[in-house]
Length: 205
Image (cartoon, rainbow, N blue to C red):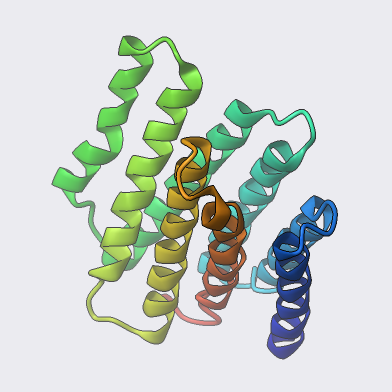
């Protein structure tokens, strides 16, 4: 199953990247299918508690991508769902570590102040999402003792961070030639690595 998942996801990845590079039509359907494939692969690992948590996170990620890839682009809803994804990844890290890092928790929660200080709800959601993603990526990278699964999860979050930096740069009009491609260049591999990081047995990552 793992080999089949990697082969199918790799094929979709190669096709939509080639289409994006050659401006050969709308690749949104292929991209969404690739995310559904990651969700399906995660659902195959729901016999463990860790697997169920990751599958739930990827279900919210797939829903978020639906809103972001849709022609009408309901971005606030998509980003809100991605905030839930990051909350679930935070729970995963806390379960692995066995405690909450309080200084990092403050950084995670601080962006909530933006909802009271800034009228732009989308900006506030983006700030909350990015702060939590950055904290999770840092926590995962610093996880000890490092195991294969924790390294895969850390790599997945690092690629997700690269993806979102590309998204931000693209919407600011920076390096659009690369960032237009870079979003999904990093995004699908990040989801694949997160799927592969699921525990197959036991409670230790």
